[in-house]
Length: 258
Length: 328
Image (tube, rainbow over all chains, first blue to last red; front, top):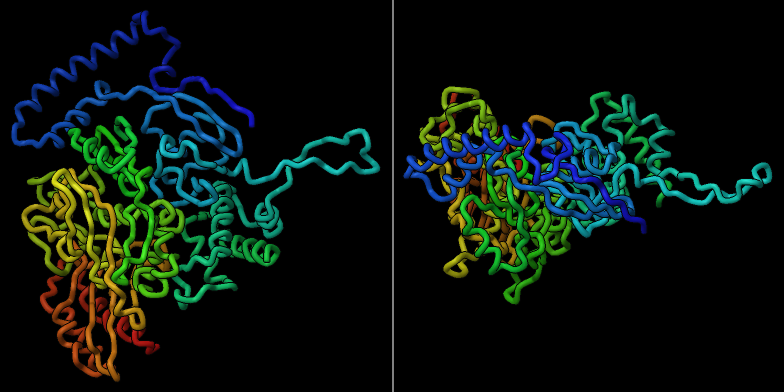
């Protein structure tokens, strides 16, 4: 397994390359503003004696985000079989870690609030919304993004191509192939999320998980209707309305896999 | 999202110590908390990640009941063979909530603590929300209140609890086990969530320094006749306009005991005691189901835009009972 180290990425570091011992004009102005704001906020908040400790702590943080800035911490994520070490703030979501820190921009940011499913990735084989979870919470887990769905395998040398005996080429995941076969996308923005979600959904069906349209939740299902596929994919929105083709692609993949 | 510090809790004792830090909050699945933090509604200064705690197991208790760990994911609870077989109501309620991705993240403890989806609470552009900023007023009272309460509301807050799971747990007589600085205690589900009253900022009776560790279900009594009916604006992935959890057992066609609990209509799961009383000891038929539906609406008080909920809920109760009894 290879390992990648990433440059520190935090708002402060992005501003300019600085060493902490050197005070630049920019860092001086930022700190001075922070100190002034903190002094002002602390004075006002001390006056509000009716607040609980909790309320006061949260109000202080709200009043002065700069003074309450939490520095980046080291994190290690395992994405698509590759280990990545980097420094990031605890508030970094898994979605932003993938896109902004690791530059795996295949995972898309739609609503960023868990309502559209564009950010769906697989963590230890289960689909989740990467926008509503923190990167720091997923250290030590196997994260699969859209970039990791296709398998890289050695191509079989052919008679016409005898010189290139060891060329590696990606083999599409059966669902990716089915999406192409059924034209299951138009603009493509939601597609990475649809695909990761579909991989998770088919696994959940194989595991016998019930859904809201399952007639008898006591029975383990072995066959799945289009209504089941639609319900299980309801967490992924497609503004182009490719739904019928997504259902067809999943139906094909389900049949081929059983 | 505001900046915050992050710590991982290694065991329950340290988690209870860490939560004493002012401005600290536990994070489990995070699907509600991080959403609220992105909107600026919640601003913790320290998050304590409890996902390493050994609270994910689902085990059958010696008395025949079921103990569900607070960190069990909603999808795992819904798919658990004992839950499906003996508490199908809970499976139905869980799979009707959120999306599969969110159910893979969301925990049982977090679902119990899910905050209202009232738009005025969620959107900090509105100044008036007693739940978010105590004393600021209630914008929903004279605003858009189509999704709001018809039971038990107060002039301070007319928001509703959004959880489907909690409605089912109420019908199943669940008990919430918590641990805090003074030791462990158990809270009956009926006493767990609060009505808004004069303190709408408090959704539950859980103290800020307490941790939910598990939920207990008594031995199943309603496994054969139970149904969770959820009515919403679209077919899937939406919060309930209203929902009706019904569960009962029959003795020669007569209802021996029954639970009727409503969702989407109050600040907490709303137990329709009058409807239960009307049905208990009665033969199970269309007339008694209709009467239960009517009785379930005793004391309903709609606001400007949610009058439709009264008729909708009455019908939901009647239909949920029919489906629970195998009547199509």
